Amino acid sequence: MLDQHAWEAARIVESYAGGWYGKTIWQGRGAEPEDIREFTLFSMKKLRSELERRSDAA
Image 1 (cartoon, rainbow, N blue to C red):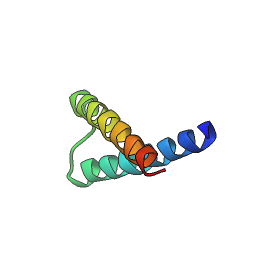
Image 2: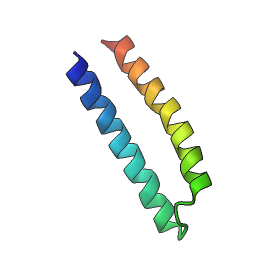
Image 3: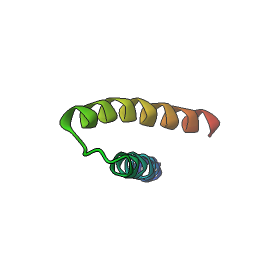
C-alpha cells in the first residue's frame, strides 16, 4: 500500500512539475526563486488534494 502511494505521488509530482517548468521556459521566463516558492506551495496543496481524492475513491 505504501509503495503504491509513493509511486502515485511521484507520478503526480513529475507530471505537474514538468508541465510547469516547460510552460515557464516556453513563455521565455527563467525559474526565479519566488516563482519556485509559489510553485512549491501550490503543488503541495495540489498533491495533497489529489491523493485525498484517490483515497476516497478506493
